[in-house]
Length: 274
Image (cartoon, rainbow, N blue to C red; front, side, top):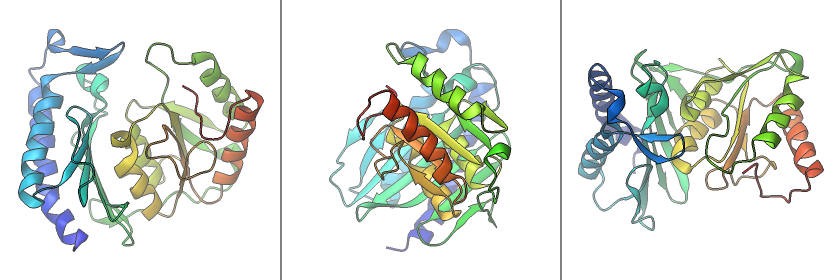
């Protein structure tokens, strides 16, 4: 399959969804918010965006499978599996904070083959096809070249679901803050990864994520020359619910800090701060 050609045909659908999201935000009201769980928001915009994407992707790739935030998993044993987050950053969307995006990735032959992240507020489209580099609006992007941890500028996400171990997560923040320049919490893991791929951030880490949060962004980071692992330095970041992404220079030190802390907690490899 020509994944670049498929990418080119997916882009109009993703931009169409982005336009729909922006149009709906103008009239969106707080009482239209629903809750999947504590602080886990969803709305008709998420659902309708996903339906639009699935309809168009079905036209391009019939008989494919899906791993979707709103629709769940279907036919994941198919040769082609789309991994979709229609509105990554729903809480930002609800509060009219212009920091949300649509994330779409394709898994085939057991690997992620393409990824798109579209941020409609700034009309920024981050894309990657395996083996062909990473791009922002058609221009090549690369991860940062920063090799000094004291100058590192990272992003993360905070625990927000019930029963998550907030204290441990705050401690790992302390571990990093004592050695780096600063940390930001943007509210969209997909954009955190896209910004890491483009060198705006030097790295990103977060636990308790799902495949649709990280699939497209992680591939874009890798194609931009970056490193992506789970918290233990393994490759189980897509389904393992923890991710650490950064450039080639900083990744070993950031990983050493993370692993050291997890070991002090008595955690076993493969576990995360849940």
